[in-house]
Length: 317
Image 1: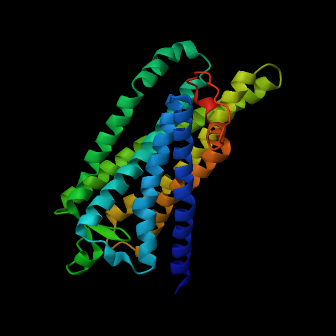
Image 2 (image 1 turned 45 degrees about the vertical axis):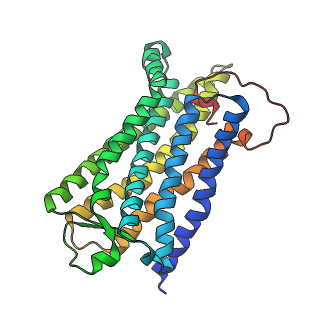
Image 3 (image 1 turned 90 degrees about the vertical axis):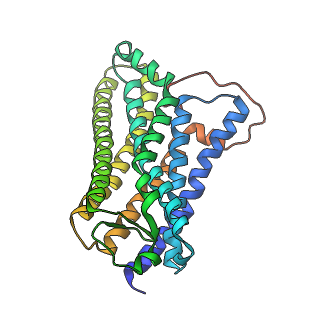
């Protein structure tokens, strides 16, 4: 066994061991709070959707790649590959959409003039479910080609691998034409770059607010409320920066694969590794910085109603 194979095997096994329990813990914590307090806030909806998307990424990618390292990939037939790849691509797309939504939501909350943004904030909170459903439907449509043209590598190896084939570690997508291959890839790249751009703007704005808050804190006292929101925003920025690093590199690799043939298997492994990295590590960031998740994991002897607050700062800090 080579060093690359050992690194690949150990890395994905660790991601499975960390990512699956981590995301399940977040989902359990919010479910526990829902049963105890009979209500769900918008921030909890966003974080629970993010945890669900991360969990699906690990289940549909981390586990198959781990099985391949143990030479068990032949258990995947064409039907299983179609379903697995479709769920993986939709879940991966949802992680970038939800993370971008999280950054925008936090920016609206800490804007210096909340009155000007009050209507936008109210509309976002009112239509949060519609926004989520729209994102799911959009990504289901964009990723529909994986459901139509995916096949197992055993089937692909029996034929000639064409230049319009997208290889994964455990399955592949054989497009009927080069035009459809490039069209699907271009749409995916534009979608990823669009949301990565939103994350970049959100991160820059939040960082500028941190700088301004630091200067104000030297001269003013009694900024407890704003300080709490700033602390919450720092957790969001950590998620945004981590996502930009992981999926920014992944997007560059994806653009490279569209232009080069044949594609190196190590490059495919690197893309899979970067995709799993965020889904496995981000739950740890949320658990360590989110007091609501920590509270939800504790069995409370007394049930006390929580104050109704829409600010995500009370759920990520």
